[in-house]
Length: 222
Length: 335
Ligand SMILES: Nc1ncnc2c1ncn2[C@@H]1O[C@H](COP(=O)(O)OP(=O)(O)OP(=O)(O)O)[C@@H](O)[C@H]1O
Ligand SMILES: Nc1ncnc2c1ncn2[C@@H]1O[C@H](COP(=O)(O)OP(=O)(O)OP(=O)(O)O)[C@@H](O)[C@H]1O
Ligand SMILES: [Mg+2]
Ligand SMILES: [Mg+2]
Image (cartoon, rainbow over all chains, first blue to last red; front, side, top):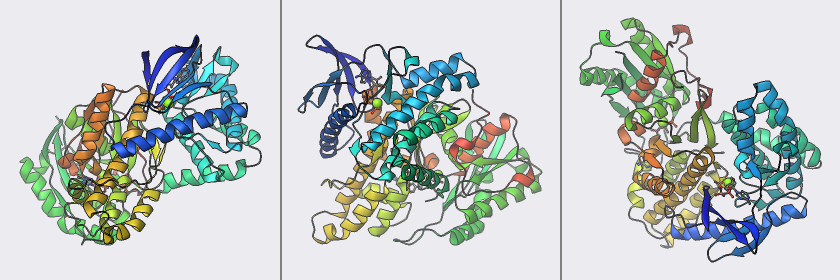
């Protein structure tokens, strides 16, 4: 197996699974943290990841197919999303090759798709827990907006608006810090989100506002 | 050649530092220490700063062997921080600036921590973990801003440590966090605590309520010692900090990490960060309590950078603000 990428949690290897192109996500032990904590986090995250991937697929959200899980080595064997780029790389390439106005225009349909997809996900009470542009892939020609969600290790099932609001807050901060001048795109994401998560979105947006205010109002003293 | 003097008093430390072209000439500090179990209140802290301002300033000038006429610019902390202590320190800065006839620079405290860390360690373009009593942020520089990638969604990590120190009635001298660190060295029985990471953000309030509520019984029954609880608390909150830092490094493709802020002088936190960095083939930059804990030189250093890039703050704008985010400042001195 060849090491392909290293995220924060895992090593990503490429191999094949009975002839199919396969990614092995290996959550190796982190020697900086206490062994009890390390074991419990790792086991919990492998389980959360496979559960949420399955649930997403059942609601029509594209995620890699899980082929096999080895709990002893904490490895998930999953479909390799062939011919894909991360949303992060795609936004960066659009922003670097176009004027600011053109870039936003080009990326608006993608923002729509992201918002729509997250609305469906939250409607099913799936909270992703790590929404960043590195954890979203675009398969095929990026302008087709074939969006695939990955990296569900921090996910959980919860009906609370607070958790969904924080999920969106995490995405907002990751988007705007990684990609300067994308505030407009986040608004497009929210609009689409409200349409597909039709019943719950009002409370979620109210919570998002509340979490944002907490950040701004924090007095920042010991 | 530019000589900058910096005044810091946003919380319970009063510091005056003098920096000459990247060399720290002096950096004395006086800390307001409250009795065990008590935090510091704005009014008393401001009074502390007023009482010690002249003595700390004199010390800074004496140690630097410099007279006011050699100083080019007077820098002070504009915010964030506690209102009354900020204002009482800014008044001193304004007074000497007018007395000496020198221009002024208003500095963002968080930027001071970052620039001091970069100066002392020589880190070029690191992911910054800024951890103190009031702030917990993961920061990266791009396009003239220090951008906040991750942050606490409730209380700061230093605040969490300080409040637990109050439960144990630990001394606040030199700081609650330091005393937790000393006890933690002798602990070994690990208690599992709520671990809350959301992408590059963290949350400590659930963990704090949990341990505040459980600690008295656990101690009374003799199941855990205070040392064990300090150990478990540190292992848990630091693991959370390392995880979000590592996530930001993976996300940004960064190979350097810098720790700043008062909690950043914790040796165990530095050791854990070092282990993480090594596993990724990255490099850790850290400093000690002289430069991690709030001090005057960090304000002078950030002000020095601002001054050299052509900025000064007109006297009428030398005000203070309790809220002043890291990402609001235009970083005119970096490309
Ligand atoms: N199934 C897949 N197909 C194609 N690429 C993938 C797949 N899974 C992961 N990747 C790539 O590997 C990278 C890291 O994977 P992943 O996000 O799952 O790891 P991680 O360690 O959990 O990351 P994080 O640092 O966000 O916690 C992704 O950003 C993506 O580029
Ligand atoms: N060795 C240590 N280990 C852990 N925490 C420490 C240590 N030394 C100091 N601290 C903590 O650092 C914090 C003080 O940090 P700092 O001096 O940066 O001031 P602050 O007022 O909190 O600053 P800011 O305005 O940047 O938030 C306190 O919470 C203190 O307990
Ligand atoms: Mg990831
Ligand atoms: Mg500080």
